[in-house]
Length: 87
Image (cartoon, rainbow, N blue to C red; front, side, top):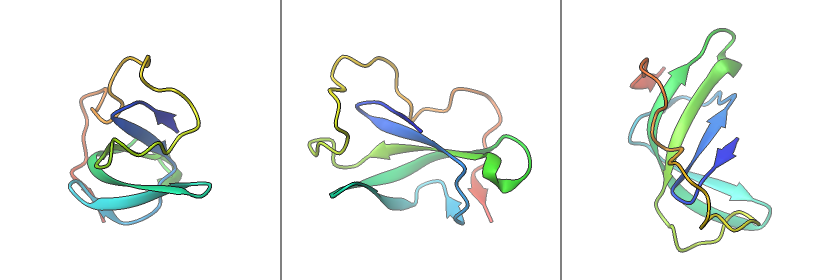
């Protein structure tokens, strides 16, 4: 998992998801809503599936670190091969 102020990149996702779906992510006793921006399958097995999500509640402090100084936007796909949905 990589995090930024705008979003998160998660690896090893096994759920059936589509770009545009809203999901909740919980860290300890904190939870926030996110929207799936991209899905990529880096190989096999399905544990190689990565997703990029955009935070829909940016005012919530989900992570225990200061992300204001972080650069980059991890909810944007870093490469070329994007899978629009994983079924």
